[in-house]
Image (cartoon, rainbow, N blue to C red; front, side):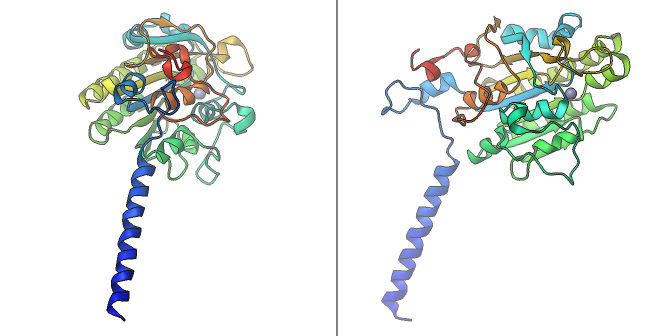
Length: 326
Ligand SMILES: [Zn+2]
């Protein structure tokens, strides 16, 4: 081959590789929401620091009715309410069942749009076919994880969207396992977006009845495990940069959660972290699918237009990103 031709080819190759490298670097950089009222001015780092966090943990307590909180010994949940913003009047979706409700939580869509109304799943079936908070976060280069207590929730972990998935599969000691497995994982891996699901007190509700003594005791066990989870965020050194949202997928009455009674539809919704107002009772309506938009918003990721859910704006100390004003 002609020597100068060879040099030219090498030059073109090097230029191409450099360009590809830069493009990859740009893809991994999270898209930040504009927090400036002047569209041409980029937000400063300190503005972003006050309005966004680097990590998000969503914890779902399966079948938790809000009125169980005041009827139980749950020091952790009670202290998180004081440290954050909360409502006992949030609303789940119809049908108020585990898989449709969790699908709404991670897609930001009502059941009418995501169309998952079944409450069972196995690996021979298709994964969720909508964008989730995990698939959106992955596109921004974030590390994602799921720790769940029911195998069917793997439906939400579509391939390529979750870096670490664990299910305890309704084991008798699933509450403790979920707490300890997450704690061990977070210290080394520091995932930026995690969903943690506790299968209780739903399982006990189906056996002994909602609000029964055993149901309340099962919830108290979950409260202790959440204490372990929050402590592990501190030990991992990421707690100051984390937003935590604790909610449920549905309530229940008797030994079921059918129909659309308030005891079934109403769920607690609690958020805390440095960007969230403290000891604040949320006045606006919160739906389970608002969780997705709230998480994306707190992480500084643009919210897709087509979502049914909106960020729970009221909880944020700094409203500037929504209103353009401090
Ligand atoms: Zn459930």
